[in-house]
Length: 173
Ligand code: FES
Image 1: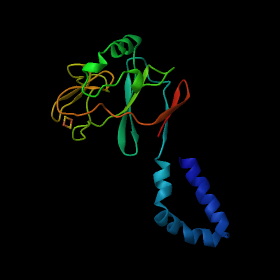
Image 2 (image 1 turned 120 degrees about the vertical axis):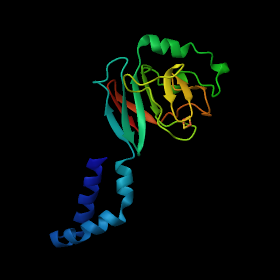
Image 3 (image 1 turned 90 degrees about the vertical axis):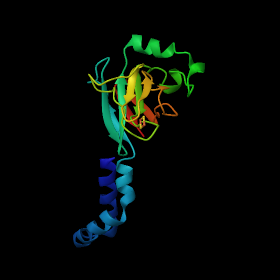
């Protein structure tokens, strides 16, 4: 994250010593150390407190949109009741969420067909035939757990690695 990156540069410049030397190696560090920039984007912390039940947000992680939805209890129930064996990419709702945090559905908002961004995370967007997510590019319909139900997409929306830091804070990546 940003703090660590600054720490790294501070330590690196200190190791080379001298204010003049530090000024001289700044551009060098910026050009020669792209891994620091990659690391800065490797994970993102999201405050979930402002997301009301039934609402979703989109955050950017490694250049990709990540959909975070705060599901209502009834939506969780509906998703858990789906007949998993009939699915193209059989996955239970519990496979796609974490115990103790079932109400938070966190998935990569990239259609698994050819990579368009499906609709359905923002208020008022079309949610397709399964009340979930709809990719308008070639008509893929995902259910409210992000599982493919209809259309050309071969697999469910991908779930990124994430970890809850508290009930209202999650780190993605
Ligand atoms: Fe989504 Fe083709 S990219 S249906």
